[in-house]
Length: 438
Image (cartoon, rainbow, N blue to C red):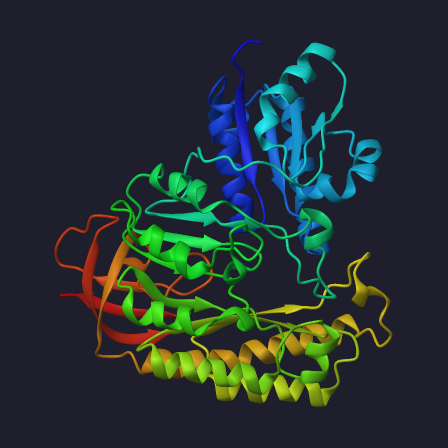
């Protein structure tokens, strides 16, 4: 099989990005990977199917790429990831623009799939079961930070979520494989640990492991400067994990805890563990025991039967919790989930209105949080220059990539991207801070 030029597009979450990076490493063993789709002979789109909006985005991207078959050098399109894993029965017959399909555990087989495409000349369905052995080789596509997917699948079975049906049961990656993968990443300022439920890491392994042990092992690596935790379910934020935040200088004082709601009735319908009061106590404890910790969360508005009373409970929770940042989403009614058949589905207009209200409430909280930082100095990792505002921008410990704000700062001297600088905060504007380099 001759060398082919391959363009790769990754959609969806950061866990999907890690899968894409591992697939690129496999592709480079035999082919050339390009960022320019106009030059690609093969296009691979790694898709998301978590929500209807994600599925629409995936289909739209595939159809857009298909236009290159008419005007460019594109010969084949391969669709990978969650979309074919869940919907291959429909896609094979309806999405004729695609020449081959692979699932969420088939990235290591991509070279064989390409060979089959060209040898047979026929369309290929290579979607397997959603389980695979861990691959540790990757081509990192982020700058200065890298994600480490420590587990796949989920056992929580939240009633609104498709993940267990797409990616299967919760499966922790062996700690020794994760250490090897992290070592191979080179120098990383910020290693971001991700999974569907990060704090549950190791509970399924024999012998059992836990997230604290993994953090300590990764902290020993000289090429890893900092470690950030995303997607920690509240019931698994243990005393040991809180102590690790207190004493491990490499563990960034930032935690993402997806809470989803604060009404006990709605939480029970969602099959979420814990209560609104328990969540508040956890947040208060983290703030009191881990100096300066930034807590982020996500919430769903418009879950079936959500009343105005339930919604107001969530608003009051936000005002009490004073989270550093939060994301809000409309409930998406997904077939094959338990919540799909619940009576009391909420109208789209009501869901949209409630999400807007939640963002309005949180925006005021963020304004107060950022105002309290005025006059303080933080280490900021420079990431770029805004030509419109004529300022540099970067992130401090309380800014995770893509989801949080940035720190924009003036500097009289040249700035090197990737380096850290002391920046004194002068003002806040929206979700961003402005300051000057000292």
